[in-house]
Image (cartoon, rainbow, N blue to C red; front, top):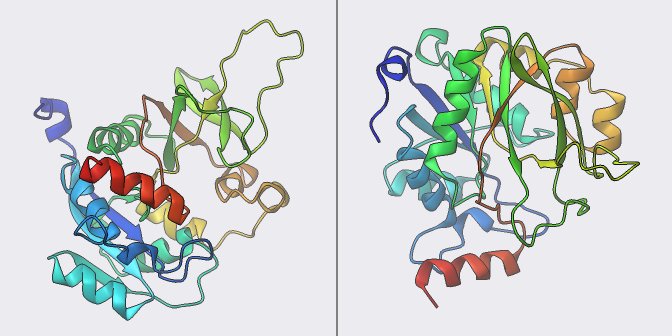
Amino acid sequence: MPPSPSTRSHPSAVAIIPARYASTRFPGKPLADRTGKPLIQHVVERARQASRIGRIIVATDDQRVFDAVRSFGCEAAMTQPDHANGTSRLAEVAGSLRGGEAPIIVNVQGDEPEIEPRVIDELVEGLFADSQAPMATLASEFGPGEDPADPNIVKLVTCTVAGRTRALYFSRSLIPFDRDRRGLVKPLKHPGLYAYRRDFLLHYATLTPTPLEQAEQLEQLRALEHGYPIAVVKTRVEHHGIDTPQQYEEFVRRTLGR
């Protein structure tokens, strides 16, 4: 579907894809290529299909990943090896861009080869629509077979502020706790996709880590604890990230139709 006239009036966003070679659970993950392409290439090809993305940069600290990305025609940036997290790596690359050419930065995870281009566009539009929010993320209902109590799936609770949907809290625990089991609120899962206004991203990387962030091991809580709102776009998200070799095998089977 072509972008609406209102969509065309906005500048495009820059997608930065952090890709580490030294994954603890799956070393060499970005270059796993049993589908005939390295995993990171699948991610880039999906991001290229998003109509709101005008530029894609893979951020890595490994020469092997850098060379592979350049070999299939995508821009790559070498970053410092000592970043504590992907957001910090993202900010290093964003800081090298001119503000006018990158008003919005989208953090696309490097291990999501089935990410839907539609949700990237919806996220960018959501941040443009909420002028008071410095960053935005997604929320989705749980799909069949997904366990809301699984601590590996991050949950979030939202609220409405001046007609805008905002994040209230994120947790690995099941939230909210439905004490009387009345079913008034459905649990929402949090796909790990973010969009930032570039200036805020650079500022965010300098903020002091916070107690809730450290307790839950969820970076986004740092923004909330420092008083910054997070816009939330509710949509249907069916893609899954790849954290383990077993999950990669499942992706290979889906891709090759086996």
